[in-house]
Length: 127
Image (cartoon, rainbow, N blue to C red; front, top):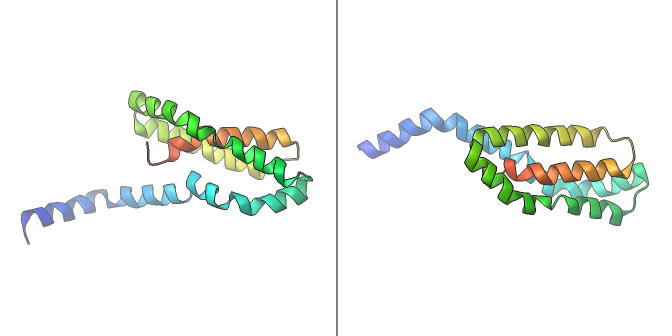
């Protein structure tokens, strides 16, 4: 076994848990919501009597992430990736809890969609 292979193996032993934890967090966070949010359109429509178009328009507010990404990048450069990611993940978690506890007014869904869109880039690979 050469020195490079031994060094690589030691590096994975030291940092493997961080890589695994990061992979797990990114696979169940903001990215997952983008792929499964369409599954909730019909249940939201039936539960709150909202039209599908209305729900889709609120989900489009989640696209705020494209505009907040440069700001998140600047904050990451200034304050560090750990701090920005922790705050973003906390906001994302609060958003998911808030969405699960919605009582009906459509503006709640709009607000949660906006918070999601603003915090999602901080939970992505960029940070």
